[in-house]
Image (cartoon, rainbow, N blue to C red):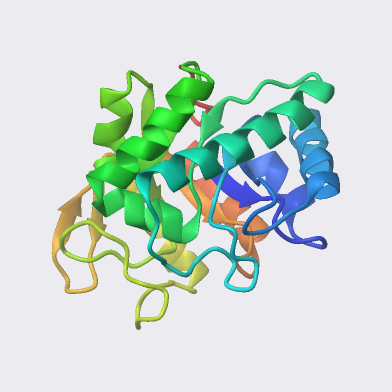
Length: 244
């Protein structure tokens, strides 16, 4: 289980940590700042949670969720910059980065555009080939990670709507975010145990669920993470951070 953290000064991160295995820490572009990055690294380390980078566009007003034209070279540079910043802070705390997962619009664009996915993977591999590369199940991200020689992890979202093609419903469209905790927990268990999820048009999608994301800015995210973890434990699902 992973969560996007280090994004809000008074967020749910402390309550999230006991339920997750992997923390995707904002690197100061879409959210966060050096003090918050350091505090979040410490918090994750205190709970034995794997620390990963969560690079995104420099778009604090839009929380990194607004798509924009971007070149391959720009993607590589912005990812390298953010990995370097978080890695330095983590090293000061005696922690090594374990994974990389892009944020928001950068993640979604790279999930469908192979050239951008390759840029993300290339930057990650250039920085440290030991890093696990996290991407949307069935997307261009995973193929790019494999081409770059990285260990990849296929990600699913229990609280997000899926289209029939396996992509996520845009946040500005109906059905993008699922708010009923019982539904979210049931979807998480089904994806983890049966590798299936129901899309917004009612079709059944096959998904390779290797990690489940809980968004740290979702209302009651911590409670939701605890309930998902409890349900997975009850079904005998082993929950652990991925290793390269």
